[in-house]
Length: 529
Ligand code: HEM
Image 1 (cartoon, rainbow, N blue to C red):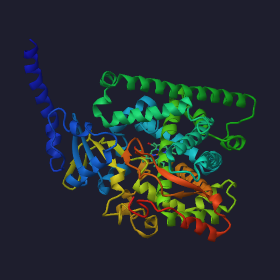
Image 2 (cartoon, rainbow, N blue to C red; image 1 turned 30 degrees about the vertical axis):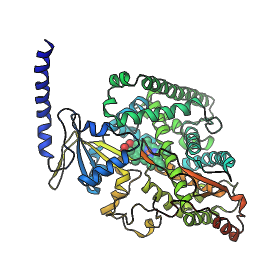
Image 3 (tube, helix red, strand yellow; image 1 turned 180 degrees about the vertical axis):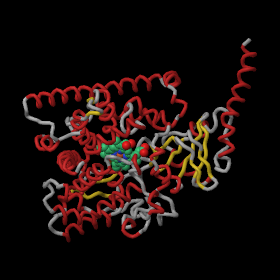
Image 4 (spheres, rainbow, N blue to C red; image 1 turned 90 degrees about the vertical axis):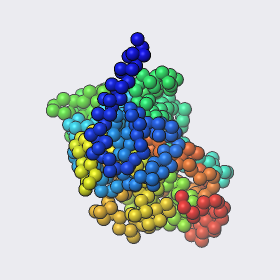
């Protein structure tokens, strides 16, 4: 009986699979890619890869097959592209704003927040949230950034003059403190208490999401629960901790806001709110209405969770890779340090003002160059809602298109000497011209670009400049082994050695040069990163 069923069912499924792919296969046959098997497609090629070697794996793929590669994952047609023309069409058109299946695993945590929502919901939320990044509000946020980076340098003091260490965990906690205070209006003090439940849950959740992302068969909850029961349990626990935490804060803040309004301390006028206390993303959402209706706690929670996720791991990657690059490039570090002293002054305890941070133009291109080599968001993906035809190439609606940023931004046709850290290229090279503008997109581009990019730049500048005001970074410790995780990470951290600037006299440039002259030489110094 069983064999009869197998004999009938398998050929039927094979035939159905052949028919369902046939048209798409024919239409896209001129786009190269590895041979696909019935049913599974290229699943095995992908699933055998660990998170660690995603970068090398995709690099190899593009070297072998060209700028756009075709892949089948089960019945899903995928394209992986570093072709700026296709990237431009996808990112700039409001027709292609739906996210690819790559993001599905984030839903457990982020629900349908701004990063994952589509259509009308996304449009309305984007409109509500955009004012949170108003200049005036950012100015207040920069005070929080300064305070938190001050705690950070205190924590780093213990490493000064000792040995190379991984700076990333310190930056993570600082970034988490910044985002919770600015988005939620709540201090979680992660830097003072790294074992705090919330920080741990964020860490666990990020790890699990990425594990599921690189193993496409774990997309199905049932298979995930059967194959990885412990991980499933950890996912449920972490998501409960994260959701409970934000829900409590929303409740408390809603009560506070209502009490304030009752007591007439606050009127609903925006300017008045801003004047009385620091306005947070949560306040914006609590006061927002859509067609006269306030947002529910659940609606607000998904947005707040999205900000916590998007707003701390990304900036951590941006800051810690910049610090690593600076530690390996003493001349660049020297220039940044001089600029900081010129703009902010010699008193390192003085908080940096927002305008001063904006005036750090050289530091800005250093951060941009670091993000080119190590894009904090390693890849983005879209699901095509309509067909795309470019010359003889056809991309059918329903396909997923993935854009690996770390390959796009190292294209030798666009960037001279692409694997080298050369911040000055942002002054001299012409890749910002229209034709190649879509080759440098660490914050993505078009209608779904990063809403927090000004915030991110401010935080990165604030933290990096604060660290450099206190420490010189030495090129010690292992070179990072980069991997495309949810954000770009290094499997062995980002090692640097800090050397207290106290040892130099900030008022005496000759002394500074003496200090820099004492930098121990290390493997990789001045070499390609
Ligand atoms: C160096 C830091 C950052 C980088 C490189 C970065 C990069 C990106 C990229 C590439 C996207 C587009 C994702 C996609 O198309 O799938 C994005 C979206 C987004 N980012 Fe950022 N981001 C950073 C920091 C931040 C911060 C600090 C916040 C919040 C405070 C934030 C909030 C968001 C949100 C909410 C979206 C979704 C926007 C939408 O779909 O409308 N990001 N980010």
